Length: 285
Ligand SMILES: [Zn+2]
Image (tube, rainbow, N blue to C red; front, side):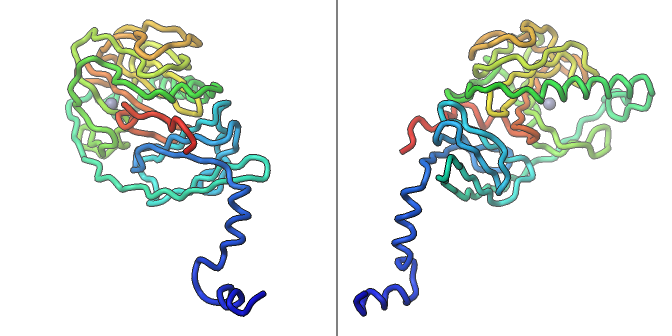
């Protein structure tokens, strides 16, 4: 080794590790990410087909046959998240900064007490049964990437009557944050699938949700449609973007006709409106 080369290697600076970096590059997987990197948002990724995806060091999902995957950031997401794709002995890692969001606080009054603080044993038993049913629906995991071409709004016209993530004060008592975006629309307005998917759950007359439908879009991404007055799909049915799902109503815990639209990635709640118009990375460049 020449003296000048040795001087470089023992001095300070990032250029020193040129050789190890080059070796690492040969083993690096391609990884492209886009999305809404904020609390309640998500990343859409493309990497090697079937790569294992780690989030903050935990293996959470496997990329689709086309190499696509979703990562959701919930309402209380930390300020950064590390995403890593691994396949064979190759890997790629990115750290994303997650922007905080100041969620509003809203009061809803005049709700029937039984929907806010149920105490009747028969009602509590019914709620438990419905939770078990919903849990089965949310456990749906189709091997698909039906989110890849983006989402449309599920209603042609609407007014946002309650924002996603709002801290709710129900009849004067602080409750869980609102994990939906409420879209007020006339009773009977047609609700359309915002993206392709498979119906994972459909049931009328849920105590809280009323007429409820869940769509599995693949990669652990599930959207929910609450308070429907009519349900027009069946469990297991494939839907395409734009297909009618049902009609706007005010069944369950609702004070007026609206669609409460929700989105989950695995056990995390996301703001579905942030997904409207987004596309998964089309290339790995
Ligand atoms: Zn809602």
